[in-house]
Image (cartoon, rainbow over all chains, first blue to last red; front, side, top):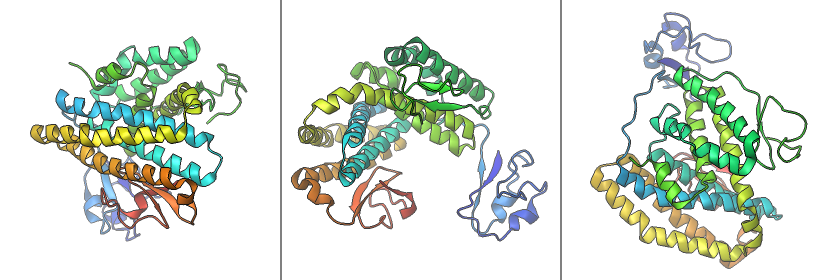
Length: 206
Length: 167
């Protein structure tokens, strides 16, 4: 475990600075140095009068998965939310009137949030979860991406997934990757591959 | 054992939107775990799948009559309120599944709000948005409102005003 400071709550009482045995809490940028932090000694957490410090696990306990019946209750709703979100996002994109666009975009966001909620309810809580492992090990991602973006697109996704899996298995953050996404077709661009999208020749990327 | 994805695949052969949501949610979780690079990886995957999903839906979106589609969406929501949500809430309660129950209870209330908002828009069209009010969405539960400012507290999930995003 390591301590993290929520700067929105920090009131600069600085009691955390005095109690920390290693000086982890005393940094110039307001963060707490996780490398110096003594695996959750809690002195700073308990000392802070504004409850601005919390502990983050390096190993999260595995959450028991909800039984199949409960997941079955969520799935039809999830599929509908995802479809409504995607369609509303398209409708918002096509709408010229600024206010109407914001209404469509707000509705889209509402369905997006409901969808993500259902997914968490079905057990996809953290990247370490068994659910994500199963998804990655299945052929589903590959099949889907092949359908829209062909071999090269599928390869780009596979590269990113490999990096992700290595990080999860090593129980640490991934290395920094130069990633962007083609605004037109969704092609994952690793390391700024060229000026135009290799899949659709578009220039705009996110 | 059937996973959630197996069940999703029974209903949708190419669940690009669902996958985008999976990666999006996990990306936010990675951010909260203080793993910003992992979070960026996951959110890029999410965005990629979202754009792929929108591209596949684009033709349908351009061809459809918007008011008709919104009306059909309302009917879908009403059906869910009458069937899926009621049945799901009962199942989750009987199984003691608190997490699933919470998602369904909030989801049900947000759906009622969505139904009402769509209805108002279909009746009033652009007149609904005439004033200075803006759209606000609660990032915790999806509650959506046309209002002068973010509500002090979300009426559905009780999140405070800073959890609201203006759209």
